[in-house]
Image 1 (cartoon, rainbow, N blue to C red):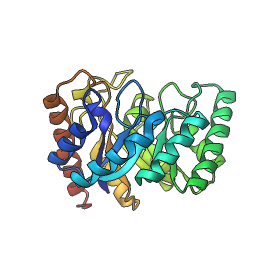
Image 2 (cartoon, rainbow, N blue to C red):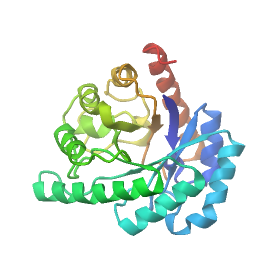
Image 3 (spheres, helix red, strand yellow):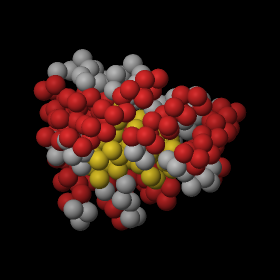
Image 4 (spheres, rainbow, N blue to C red):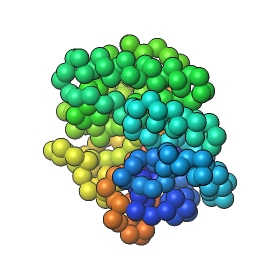
Length: 265
């Protein structure tokens, strides 16, 4: 498994700051944020001017480009994101499922939209991943399994985020075991029990919450997963560089310890 972090953690700072401190924290790679409103990193409608800088930073700071997070399912935006991914050399694009929880018609619409985007991903030679998300149509293990059954494209995969599963009332260790056959990316962070949202940025650092992340990573390792483990901490746009760097370093240390505990490193 490769340890990475989403640059959205440094959303209030420029992209080079994110790359610089993620390298200092010991990460293997990086997930580039293309999340409007949370960062000004890979801005999709300006991707052609930004792409050379992303490639330069990856080389300068010796970070593998593991993924991109671009949450919109809008086909035009996603096509630009895929073009950017091909140009930059980013293999995975993570997006949200959309729709609303508890609505079968909404889930069907989400599956249809994701299926078409997976076909687009096939044409571009990239992988599209989607994660269960609180409040969305695909929000837990049963709805994730329905999406997996409906979309067979080899360019489609599941992105697992234990904090969303935890907040939906499930055991993340059991949940990851149920879907691991199609998992191609993992967003990882911790979460305190009883929260409806992810919590403060520092509470999302691995080891600060109540999720069994050791068991979660052990299940991934035993299933042979060798993809990215990308830390995704949101809400830190107003945090200082020092605060962001501490969160990144603390979480990476916990991730490394989890890998060592299960014999993956």
